[in-house]
Amino acid sequence: MKKLRVGIVGCGEATQILHLPSLYQLRDKFEAVALCDISRTVMNGVGNAWQIPAEKRFLDYQELIAQDDVDAVLIANPNAYHKEIILAAISAGKHVLVEKPMCITLEDADEIIAADAVSDCVVQVGTMRRYSPSFVSACQLVKEMEDINLCQVHDVIGRNSQFIEATSNVIHADDITSDQIEALRQRTNESITAAIGVVPDALRNTYNLLLGLSTHDISAMRELIGMPERVLYAAQKYNGGCITAAFDYGTFICHFETGTNAVAEFNAYLQVNSRERVVRVEYDTPYVRNLPIYLEVLDANGRHGVKRTRQHTWSDPFVEEWLAFYDNVMNKKTPKTSPQDFRHDLELFQMMIDQMER
Image 1 (cartoon, one colour):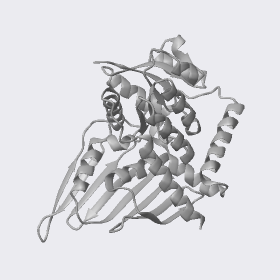
Image 2: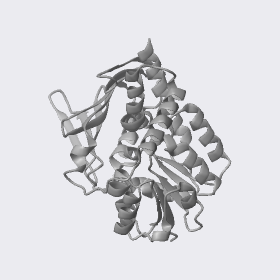
Image 3: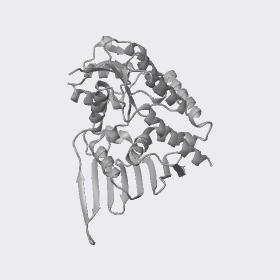
């Protein structure tokens, strides 16, 4: 069985806590062979911990992509730089797993889709919740429901640091310059302006939250119940920190709500209701690996009772995501979380912003 040799661009929390342990767990299929980060402190700390040779550690992603022994590139650096690295990797014939969001603007998405269409590479977007066995089973159950009447998508969570600091030892950068920080801020601001125009800061914050946390929710919602016909309502409060919306599915409405707070709890679920069945998927923080993702099914059971089933597996969604990536590469499959699929998230985000501007 061929191993895929992975070069990693961006060695922060997600790489350290989630991706490298997943690759090691799947070491019969993957090998991390090269690293890139703008922080020497982070890159060398991660490289030493995972025994990546010094000559395979790079400050410039172009050098990593040029390595003959890199088959695939994990892109886990800041969002504003994703597009250029995806395009460079495709051009070099490397497969890509890119952390969400794939990019920030529809124009960038179209450029990636066009490059992907004429290449032999696999480009997979890292919305890992969709690869959980509990979610996959829920999708099959929902397909069999003929009378859906209401749905909910809920995601209100504490700060990531509240979960990470108690459970992980992360190597942090202490050598990023003020110029590098300013360049990232400027690139991000320019990309958001290109996406949604000149808008108040609250809407810029809203778009950032949609790109980050809400990509998981909206992407999963679309696979579970499809693309809505339109956005009936969308609003933000707390300077873009809390968002609500209602999506019109013709015969039913899906209610969406998300936000962050200072309570160290991860409260995220999708629920589909019909006359005689309720299907619910409950997520926990991904920053503690292998926490259960629950599938709960509630069925009508005569006049006075219900039948409740609740199940989960111990498989981590990041491991499942990498397994799907391996299968897609080896069997030349189009990922379900493809660039074209991700574009629908951006479409919905912009429809929501349009509603908020009225």
